[in-house]
Image (cartoon, rainbow, N blue to C red; front, side, top):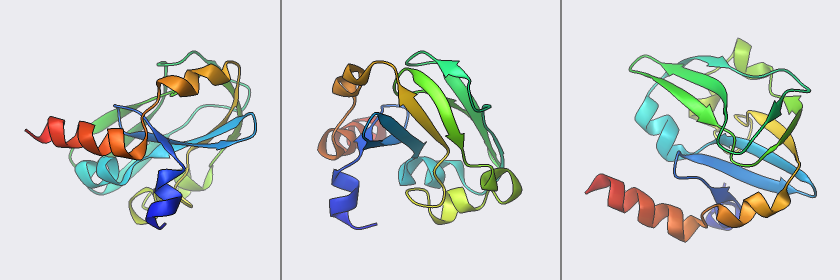
Length: 131
């Protein structure tokens, strides 16, 4: 996606992105995360109907190098899961902001979004992490 597309997203310090669609939050991992992980070999995702609080672990991404927990950026109920990733998890590497999305959460507390980072803040966070 172009920079404009990335600017519309919200980010977490744990390298998830959030696309807000009404009362729904689409969640995936950022380009930085997929790059740091390397080749993704396995993705474990929740079931539709699962309920998470903000900060709960909702899944796991496994790569050739490491295993990484996925954290719910907002509280909500899972209303859609990208099952295609289970069959073909390399999409997480190839198109993390598009086809590589992971879950859709129906937000129970949209004000959770206020605590998320803008693209600018996220890039600053990455720079600080890299120091």
